[in-house]
Length: 340
Image 1 (cartoon, rainbow, N blue to C red):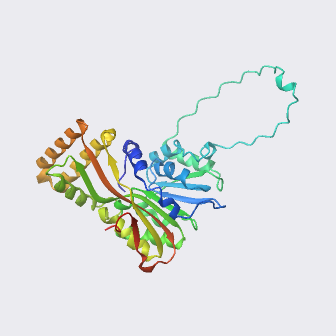
Image 2 (cartoon, rainbow, N blue to C red):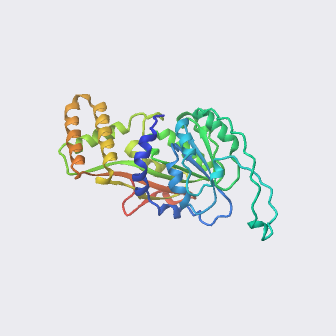
Image 3 (spheres, rainbow, N blue to C red):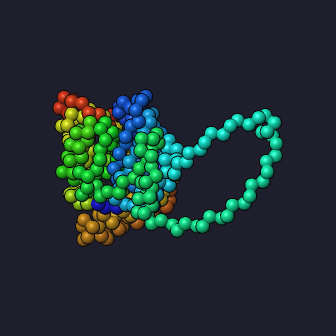
């Protein structure tokens, strides 16, 4: 599976949060449930999806963050979501209740405590060791419970435990996977009667301002690169949202989709620069003979960013799915036509 750095995930997190279609949460029908909801986050990285989604679900939750990068999962345990009590990531202690103080005793001076010997420092844990140790101290079944699972999803999907009637979620994942992998995931979700919520699936749209004569050519090359193998087999790339609607629809899911485009202006200059550099590199990989043309485009676009006049819009689709037979299994996209 193609990995991403913590720096890249941190850079994109504000844009992801601003773009996501919060209205789709209501389509899941989760609010007010008495039982805790199991949430399985695929390709969780540093936990950005949990940080955004958990406070908005409106119910008690137990999360499992799944990724093949031990370092990213270790970082996730250090950035808890607002809903998660710190005890979900720390050892729990039990205290005997103290007898209430008499009013006067509450104001009387106490004898000083004897100083304790300093604790010996503990050696830092390697990321994987930290995860293994952390897994022992999570308390299953508790509200706010957060566990991590290191797993190569490209090869180990069948080994992943999907609790009955869980919520399966992912952010910026589906455009990286293959048609076959997505069909296996949909079948497993349907077998578990699981709701699904997939965010920020790239759909091939890149709009730039000011316009450049080479924009369309670079976008075409980038989208060809998006179809290359990202570790799961030939990637769906820009076709992922349409494929997901068709595949989950065939399993009887009621689907609701919405646009979740990045809209990047001068306050997102660092992210714009990273995108432009990344797009140029991807385009050159696809057609090395056009390297000079693409690099000239990159220089012009970076100049617009430096001047504070660059605006980028990157197309994404979010969709929510609830098990249940629908006519034709089609999805609708709010405010627009169905993806594809």
